[in-house]
Image 1 (tube, rainbow, N blue to C red):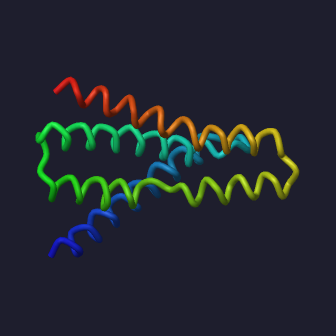
Image 2 (cartoon, one colour):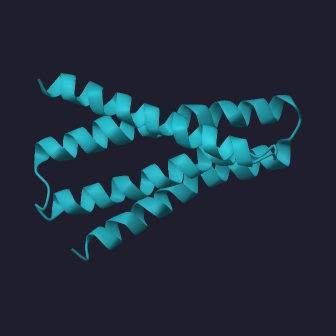
Length: 122
């Protein structure tokens, strides 16, 4: 039953990612892949928050698994970010590719820490 619930939560996360990605791309016309970065920053923040709540026993292991592995696992998309870096390199947008790659590595960790710290206030 747990595996099925994780699949359902993962599907919800992927659907949410699609909706947010589509909404941002409809408004953002630049070559920078803003939608993927926003999604991964949001996922990092909520992963930190979920981890904090779990570490304080404010969330049970089952809910933690469903949210962290299922929902946020389906929502976040590091593989898409790496593919976008490769595309930028192929079209010779090296400075943007390097900045984006570094942003994809550093900023989600920072938002995860922020979520964890804010979760510690509960």
